[in-house]
Length: 91
Image (cartoon, rainbow, N blue to C red; front, side):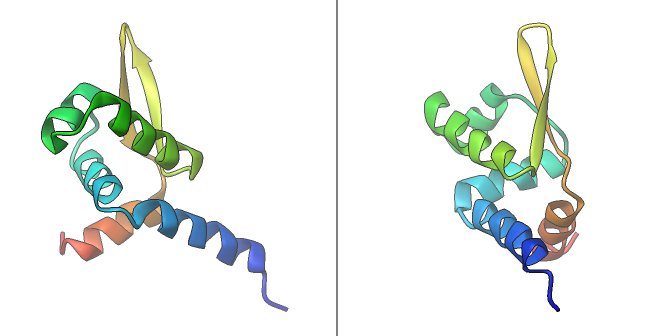
């Protein structure tokens, strides 16, 4: 019998990555973790919008943040997402 829970988990990750801004965030984080301000500057989006995208990626288990003083540095923790982004961008 097929384990549909695993398929569901992977589909949720794909849904989280299936937005151009979130894909760009993950690609940038794969290249090196950074904070919301740097992501905001790269994308040219308001901080609140970037925070919403980050929340979606965090809830999908794709990224996590580590506090350092006043800022939070985000990194990609999901190997499937890392491999997918590298494959998509031929890295």
